[in-house]
Length: 397
Image (cartoon, rainbow, N blue to C red; front, side, top):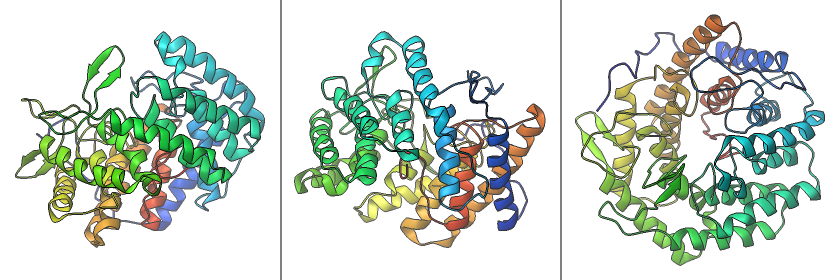
């Protein structure tokens, strides 16, 4: 199930905190240097359709600005830039991009990672106003009567937005919205031969996805993040169905456990990355506020699979790169207190730095994106220093 060509050997560089801190500063400095208030950031010739001036949170300017602000805010970097003057134009660009780039019914959704709900959350972080808070609430509330989709496009993303906004504003309306959407999300869970699952209506296709961006794990993320807002009955429901579904869809082998992109099929999965496969499932569910010996053993076995697979050849990024896979080890370190997982996370970090430098030399500049580029890697590197995993936009905003 570990596909040759998708993974590479570990770099032999030993963990060096001073060198890692220097790389974080270098990434932030490069991003600020290449920012243009009108054109934002250039795309990357990676074959992943990263266009010049992409405004989105997932792989464009909103995510990069958030990451640079966050890195400075937590003390990871000294360099800083005031991006507040760029926010009105960024918001306009986000709306225009959303309308022309995706199916016509998608603009109705409050999209956390591609729409202006995410951009408004960023603006709230930089310079909060009541009108921005109302915009986020309106976009999130609009998801009440739409297909739930998944974390990137629909209700699970707006539930995360409500959690982040409650932390920023202390307003009670965010909990009210979250509770309404949590009730609907749980009501739409379906019993299937592969355990309780949701059916995603995504890009013209209906299927049962599993991962933390498009599927089951992504729908559970806001339930875990907003655990204290769930009723005791809802908490018990989540604690029961999560282990059942993970076990029913698991692919087990001598090197560990993984999952496919969709509910279990006859063909073993090929991908082992954050968005599809063992690493993202561990990163999601190692934060669960419940445990059984079988559930925890499954998570550790999935960490074992992620380690056996090794770093990804796709690059150093979070969504489908070495940094994203490394978060599984950081989360297991926090859950188990076993230092072997921190050591493995740091070995992945040193390999990701080698990949980052190779890409930078080949292109002549960095890759300006949160989920698919260098600033996401910088946050992973910082978390490897602190030993405290805070996955961007999920755990922190």
